[in-house]
Amino acid sequence: MLERESLEILQEALGRLEAGFAALPRFAARELDVSAMRGVLELAALRMQDNYPYFHPLYAGQMLKPPHPVARAAYALATWINPNNHALDGGRASSAMEVEAVAEIARMMGFAQHLGHLTSGGTVANLEALWVSGRLAAEQGKTALVLCSEQAHYTHERISAVLGLKCETIAVDTRGRMDVAGLTRRIQQTDGDDSVTVVVTFGTTAVGAVDPLDEILRLQEGYGFRVHVDAAYGGYFPLTLGADEEAGSAARGIAAADSLVIDPHKHGLQPYGCGCVLFRDPAVGRFYKHDSPYTYFSSAELHLGEITLECSRAGAAAVALWSTQKLLPLERGGEFAGMLGDCRAAALDLYQRLDNGARFVTMAAPQLDIVCWAMQADTLEQSGARAREVFDAAAARDLHLALVRLPVRFFPELATEFGEAGMVTCLRSVLMKPEHRGWLPEIWQRLDAAADTVL
Image (tube, rainbow, N blue to C red; front, side):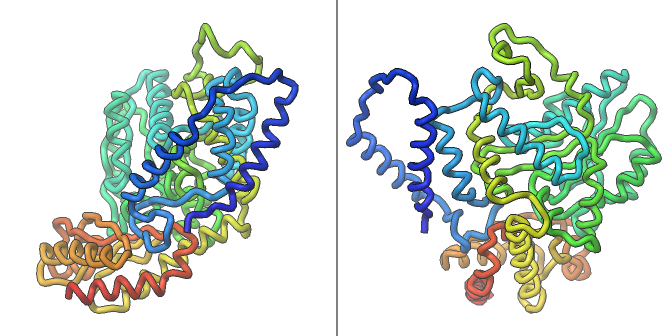
């Protein structure tokens, strides 16, 4: 089940890499104790068995996606050099590959020009975007105010606290999307001392909701606030969304965002950690300006450390992303977009099966590839207890789901019976492997059996 074909390809690539250094005088590498290494790796393999099978289609729980074999192999290949993309001194080739890979993402997003780079993950990428918002506010002599939805990732409130920015949440509608009327009211209450950044989530972590970016951009025209799009999870879906869909309509506005975050280590098929931050206006690079007494001397070209907050960063992440995008270009109608389409089709299939039954309570149809549902019960407490029992019963059948607490009003049927106040524990499935589409009948059979056991 664990793919091994790429190991042979990696061996060939290592030979090609080594040939590039053939002119160097040979040296005696430190002798390896192969027997001891074998023992340690066998022990590590045994320890790693204590994991959920994230690579298997029957793992349909949290937002965990296996990297593509080419990404795994390219990452491993780079570690023989172990480049550091902070400066060209430590990662000349991998820095160039990062610039090319990031430019490809910017083109996918519709940015005519950009400043951007990879990060160790979405948290740091979002931190950099909000840090720039704070610097812009300070430059204007204003106080930075960050507005995000109640369903936005918790990292925005945490980052704002780290950066000393004010952060407030805006209510969401019954589908988990930012309420534009509530946002409008809050912006109307601001005064000239506030510099507002609105965080628009393109695919919330809990339910996969897409904030109405098109409406928020129309609001921006009248009030001039800054728009940051957190597309860490959903950022690749514009390649496959239809123009007539709500999420597709929001996607068309991404190119107008002031800043954007996307996580290639989610739907981009990359190993952890690989995030990306983009700014539409390259002039914000002035906030990163700094001097270093021991780097940036090897070339007059831009060193990525000159436009990042992180210092040492794995050049291997750039090599892996570059290689993946060479194999699977970021284009509508391509193989990569087809994989995303399969993920979404699997989510819609599961939603339809759940919606047609009497045991489950569904929220609105998924906008991306996350499905959430509650259990029918006489009370909210009983519904939550049944969800946890189904979670355990499914796991006993090797089907791994996730649990999530959501507002009752996300489920119209429960809200009608129990009122809109309060929270309910539900089941959640992130169907982010293309294989999930073909495995949906098997997934449903096991979920169906687990629910029968509980009910």
